[in-house]
Image (tube, rainbow, N blue to C red; front, top):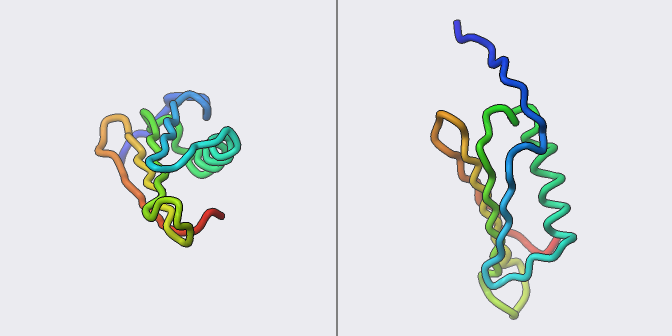
Length: 90
């Protein structure tokens, strides 16, 4: 049986880095992404080292459903996890 992790860590203790590639990262986007990530990963905070978010606009100024968001969660004592999703501005 694995021992329970007794390490206590604040939900906001791990850094979240958000960057844009061919895409302007606004304060509203940063705040919304940070809030959603902390909510989704809150129970795992003790195991997270940091989170990297990359938002890109694959088609440039042409518009359409061409946004791509890649999130990498770097875990303590384990390999990281990547998740990518495409969509529109919403």
